[in-house]
Amino acid sequence: EREPVTHGAQRDRKVLIDIAGLWKTYTMGENQVHALRGVDLVIHVGEYLAIMGPSGSGKSTLMHCLAGLDDATSGHVFVDGVDATIDIRGPQVTAAVSKVAANSGVRTEMRQRQQQWAAERGGGVIEGRDIGSVVFPDAELKVFLTATVTERARRRALDLKQRGFAVPELAELEAQIAERDLALPLVAVIAGLHQHARTRTVADADDRDRDP
Figure 1: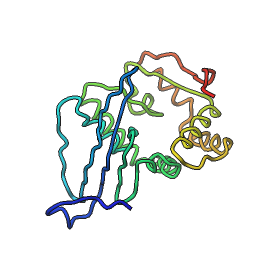
Figure 2: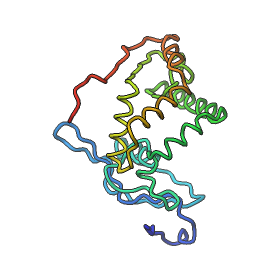
Figure 3: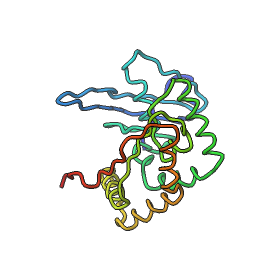
Figure 4: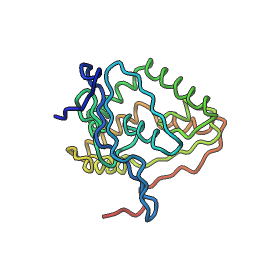
């Protein structure tokens, strides 16, 4: 178990988040861009932090890695002593997300926050299962991507394997995905495409060439 380094007055306060050696590298053609270079940061309970820096210095990348919206190239994020770097995208979290998202109060709050975020910035590119039908029904452009349940299960299995998790049978993953689809019928999603928007071609990537 990692022991975070604390100093001075913070030494007696409980550590909430411990970022250890966080790197994020993007590959652009033959070049590598290091957005984060070994970031170490300890955040204590009840502490207010302001993350500042010039454009392109890695502020958003750090927050995305911290929130689990992006994967760090290396390093760890510990939350309340638990290594959340991998666990935040694990099967247990995925299963819990569906249950939490079914709460109408949670959905209402998230919808309002997403709408406020876009309004403050004059728009944005936002993805989600019901983004075009519920959250932003008046979006100017709606892009619908799809793939068969079997293909989505294959991708999920590959993702779990790459992250070091146990991989269920493909049939079990297909059943889990199909169950989630029932929570938001496809017809409702497609209907949302035609509300006040230009639409892009529905894309099914199942037949694209795959790496062996």
